Amino acid sequence: GHELGVLSVSFSPNGNSILTGSLDNTAILWDLNGAKKQSFDGHWFVVSSVDYSPDGNSILTGSWDNTVILWELNGIKIQSIAEHRHPDKFNSIAFSPSGNYLLTSGGDNSAILWDLKGNPLQTFKGHKNAVNSVAFSPEGNTILTGSFDSTAILWDLYGNKLQSYDGHNSPINSVAFSPEGNSIITGSKDSTAILWDLKGNIIKSFIGHTSSVGTVAFSPNGNFILTGSSDQTSILWDRNGNEIYSFDQHKGDVNSVAFSPDGRSILTGSGDTTAILWKT
Image (cartoon, rainbow, N blue to C red; front, side, top):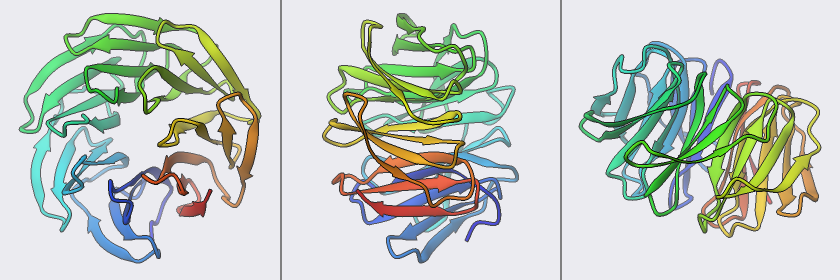
């Protein structure tokens, strides 16, 4: 249904629908059979990141037009947030676990914490280049940022650095917390993903892709890791770095991956204009 590549995918909290954001400036809500339920057409440039609210009643879209929009599921705008706060395009957005806050990152080397009315609460400055990915910890009391400067940083909500992660030698494209919150995963342009403890120690490197790892995700039980790459594949791994299965039906870069809430299926979004739902 998208006319250009899919950059971001997300499952609804109940697992009954999925959300995609695209280079064609739109986001689309789908049922699991591939039927369109709703199109979100408020941006005039690329929709780079999408996310569901934790209660599943609203969605968030971030765009290279320098805006983030909060929507009802029927396509009605609730709030336009963060307009022009990042001098450059929005790269990543995330809801807090409580649903009361959101996090954005951009090409201005920073991340910003907001309330849902669009008021900035805290700016996170410390990276030397664009922040490509952001994530909340499961408890919502810390955040993680991954940057083009090849580092990831763990922060408290007051903008204080807690830990830096420096094991990659190329830009970090994607970051994620484990469900239990005691480890993180980073995916990099160096074709690898790294599992870390919160103190910055490398637990395991995931080596198998032949090109940039653009997206990473933990399974809901925390036992598995999913990576997507510009080599047009996604790989399912155990936490020991063993490759379990490679998903290879896309004809373009795999830009975004997600596990369903029950962990029984995964979603991949690609530059080939499609998203694919797979059984794990």
